[in-house]
Image 1 (cartoon, helix red, strand yellow):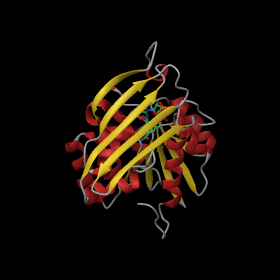
Image 2 (tube, helix red, strand yellow; image 1 turned 135 degrees about the horizontal axis):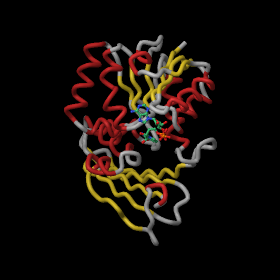
Image 3 (cartoon, helix red, strand yellow; image 1 turned 90 degrees about the horizontal axis):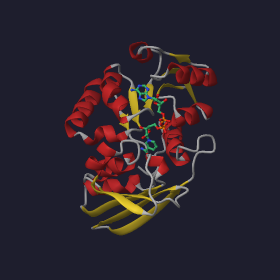
Length: 252
Ligand SMILES: NC(=O)c1ccc[n+]([C@@H]2O[C@H](COP(=O)([O-])OP(=O)(O)OC[C@H]3O[C@@H](n4cnc5c(N)ncnc54)[C@H](O)[C@@H]3O)[C@@H](O)[C@H]2O)c1
């Protein structure tokens, strides 16, 4: 059975632990030890106080659900320990030098790096951009001002520019734009809006290319267990894990 090391025991970590069916979570790690201990209790695993001990546990894959800085700090080491890696904090991969280094390490160690679809739909077919040019790739995200630690009397745009710039200012909020760019082979344009009337996070994708055009609007329901997290993002990791070893591969 698949044996997972969980790096990050926050909202997404809790959802993964509560839905651990078809895989085991023998090892967990978080900079806040109480969080790691709580999740270890939930999934009958061990909470490691040091990252090296965590990596040396009997696990085949590390699921990062921590932060962009955690992904940057630990991803290479995970691969060097010959563990596959799921990266949720995709913003870490905007730095091309870092990304190339990780890919080279994965090639040398025979490991894989997985980027889940996260809080959007459509990442599968966006990869056609690597073959046939995408002329427009825009993510328009709307969130409540509180969720970004802001106050705003009315709907307003707080960022317009490239994904690699937006993620620097909002590392917790536009990971999906980086994933879109990686899939399409083209840095996505991002508009980030705050709206005091917004009760749910909305991602709108505008894509045009030689194939035609599409518009995808995703209204994210908060997780039933953790309202701060889009349920879809956590589900996308669970479905990735469920299908990892399947001989029938759908929608890649
Ligand atoms: N790709 C997507 O669509 C998508 C969607 C939602 C969230 N995310 C990202 O996934 C990550 C996790 O999301 P969440 O809602 O569970 O966040 P969260 O803040 O609820 O939990 C993160 C946990 O990771 C821990 N952590 C942070 N830095 C760490 C480090 N260096 N080492 C060990 N532990 C560390 C924190 O203590 C916390 O317990 C975030 O980076 C978030 O932006 C991505």
